[in-house]
Image (tube, rainbow over all chains, first blue to last red; front, side, top):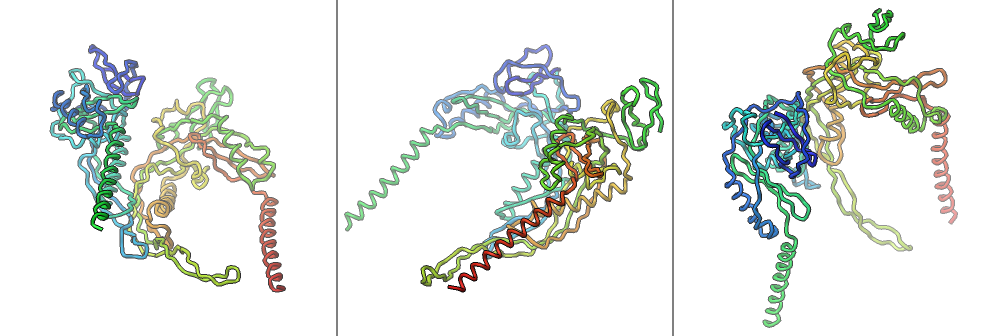
Length: 275
Length: 302
């Protein structure tokens, strides 16, 4: 196996010797340069197989494209080529002893009162991306993975392209802790009804390992901006962004304004008549 | 300890605290890693060239307004040399029980009377008040790496100004990494380093609670009780540029972080400048008092 890196966007793709070298999956560039795989990086020995086929992934995109009236017609009618990719990630479980302070609404002079506390939170699947391709937000957007489906990964026999992991265990661990802290803050804010939350945590029993996750990836350009659509290759959950058609947004806004004006006019007219 | 130079065969005396140095006769690197009682695990390489270290020192000296003018005008230090200084990098967990008075601001409008053009008028203004709450809790945090000097020659108080270092840039130790450079063995006993580590943790925890943990707009009477646990420790060699500034027979050490360029040290203070500053402040206060006095006299005369 060798690793190649895209000169255009920096994405790394694993290529099996003997198979044709693909264009960059992320930006379409063919300017790919071989790089030496980092020896300190642990690579996944197991992957989750694809259970969502191309037809289902494509259908998912069509539903998404039509999901909003505000998407431009070009996108609402478009069909997108989704490509399968095994994305490297680390899956972590563990607990976070979280100490926190915050402010809560109260019947005081300022309308606020301070609180402090600590809580032990367990996280059983925190997945952090091990390549620069997916952001943490995109990874979270792909939802949960059924890790029972993990099966041994044979890179030479893989007929799906896979990306090369770039994250050491240490770096993956600290990324997972950061993500756990973010989730802990959200949970505490919601459960304690806080209007401001500050947290500081101590991780316990962290356990994690590298995995390869099945993702359908498609990218399209609209007015020189590149948008990406991701489909969880196991569950079919779609995460994507689409531009808004500002003409449509403006038209609807104007329509609403007109309707309101008309209604006010009618009511005023009614009063005049009644008078 | 005498060691034979492997290049020219000369016997070179290496002081016990020195791990690596250069042969005085042929300038080749000598590394005495075996003499160390504990193995160095990590070496963070120099990112800063001697030119940039010198520039950083010059900028730093010029920013010291109270230093003697002679030094500021010269703007440079002597004997700049790179040294790998041993540091203990701890993985520490701290839990601090704290209690404090937390203040939250609130606004009220009050009416007041004043004289305007000889007439008494009533006006309103917004006054900010503070409502105080007693609050206590626990602050838990992992400090890793928590870095403490392992060198007796460089007390931690003096080294603290060099921090932080990015230990992630470090490489596993091999003698080749420090060959031809100056490196020191750790000279501070473990228990002393641990004591320093825990004392610094207490300070860091109190600062973290004050700066980024207490809720509200202000606070007072913060008390902290820290329990710190040092889990693992790693011996790391960190890059430091050392230089000296001489002034009237006294020598002042200036240190530069060989990774970030942060400068730390103590320069002598010019007493002439301090006296001048005090004089200026007194003069301003005096002038204000005179004006106020004169104004009062004028008003009374009216």
